[in-house]
Length: 165
Ligand code: HEM
Image 1: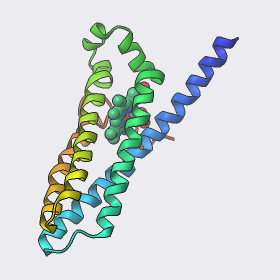
Image 2 (image 1 turned 45 degrees about the vertical axis):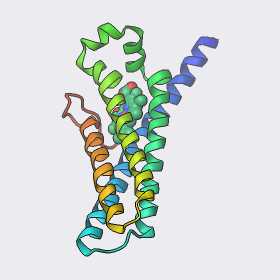
Image 3 (image 1 turned 90 degrees about the vertical axis):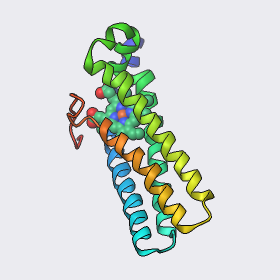
């Protein structure tokens, strides 16, 4: 009885976290595109790094950290896929779907969050306006490319709904 209740609780938590993680990807992508587009515009127009850019950069970083936190919770405690992979890592490496969730998706996205975080620190330190735009494009740009590659849209042989209801 206690076991079933615990199982139900974990199942509910899994549904909630998967839902949150799934929708938050759109906030990440929208914020990332705005951040990069306005940095490109800033270079072309030779304009200053604005408060608008600072605000969207903050939203981008915030949504990434939330994604990381929720992703880690699913990875270590809630997802049946990663639970299975962590149970027998050797066997999981031979299964492309389990390997995607246990290694590629998690690892590459952690690297992407670290790059975006490093970029945001460097952007703040840059003295010149152009330097701020350029650092944004390089660091956030690489992060967004890695994130896009790891979103399960079929590119890596794993497909998930674009909009989870
Ligand atoms: C930072 C950018 C990330 C993005 C954009 C992202 C995106 C996604 C998407 C779109 C899904 C599928 C959701 C669905 O089925 O509706 C997913 C699932 C998942 N992600 Fe992420 N993710 C990110 C980072 C991470 C990280 C850092 C981890 C772990 C350390 C992680 C762990 C997982 C797990 C465990 C699943 C669920 C697998 C399952 O049980 O079905 N994610 N992610």
